Image (cartoon, rainbow, N blue to C red; front, side):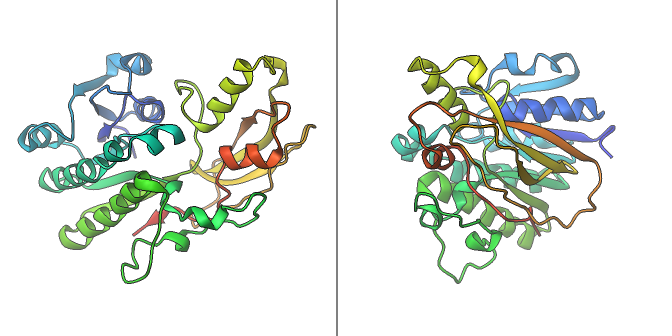
Length: 295
């Protein structure tokens, strides 16, 4: 389905965005990357640089006419652009992350005006109320209905300004679907890590912290679970405890798609001496149970 598809990826030079770009190119899509390179890097795109169109554009401050010119001619938009960082950043930059409200609205409006068929919005597990898993050792599994953007007449809560911005991004997308007939889906990313990531996010921050303290060598890294993907969507963590105090309980996602194309990826977690299992699991993972958010 992707061969020849005209796809635009906002935030495409970022950690997650660049991997998405590489995969789309591999599948035969014609890809345009839009990024202001505030955190994204052109080096992240080296694998596909000769086969993509890269546009440096600030989606918050550029004129809407310029944004519209770039969006025209595309069928699908993956919207990953946002002002973001690790926990420390969103705690100390509440006004900066609030610009996500404006960025999301401009992307959705440009998509409608440009005749884009589908929008995939990168949301976050921060849309959930923190109180649900506030207790150390809690076994509570997050469900989609714990933060339901379709039920605007019911109370909602989210994790700091960043969480509210992402939750309102979901609400905005639904509004554009209702009013203009745009097709769209919001995907709530939980904990992603891997090549091209920096040390501001949870798992990489734990690795950095352990090395910085001099309490960890590369040989102390071990597999604690496998992440099972079905059609590219996380389904469950299957625990393989390898010693130490760390134990991650199984967490499942209900899935409506046909269970084919099953792929397993190893998940690595650091057990730095002196850190409890509870501390590691709290800072590394949201325990979750929810299907992909769709309309």
